[in-house]
Image 1 (cartoon, rainbow, N blue to C red):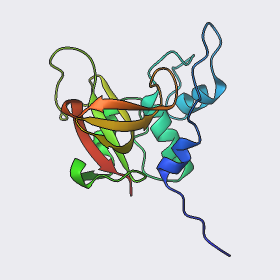
Image 2 (image 1 turned 90 degrees about the vertical axis):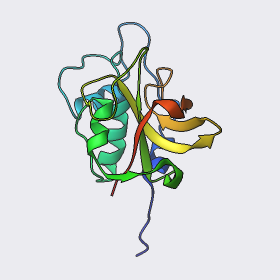
Image 3 (image 1 turned 45 degrees about the horizontal axis):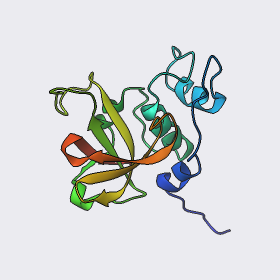
Image 4 (image 1 turned 30 degrees about the horizontal axis):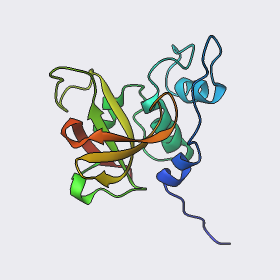
Length: 152
C-alpha cells in the first residue's frame, strides 16, 4: 500500500476561506477548533489563530501547544532561523498590538501564529486563521517576528 505524505501547510490550505459568521451565530468549524483546547470560547469572535494551528497539528498528530495563546507556540517544536524556514514545515509567531510589546520570553502577551508561506521583501507571508476573520494568506512585518518553529 502506498503511504501518502501531506504537510501541515497543505492541510491548512484546505481551510482557506473558512470565516467567522457575523452576528450572534458562529461558524461551527471555528468553534470546534477553539473547543479542542479550551472550554471557555462561546463564539467565533475571540482570537482563534492558535486554535487553527492546533487543529491542523492535531489532524496530523504533530506536536501542539494545546493553548489558545499564539505565543504558546514559542514553546513547541524546533527553533528555526527565518532564513532556513520552509513553507509546509514551519510556523511563525509574531508580537501583536501597538506600542512596545514584550519579546519572545513573555508568553502571556498578545501575539499571532500561522504557517510560514514565504517572504516578500520585508514581509512574511502567513497562512493562518483569524486573519481578517478568516483563514487566509496575509503579510506580516519581519520586525514583529518572535520566532519560527518546525513541528517534528
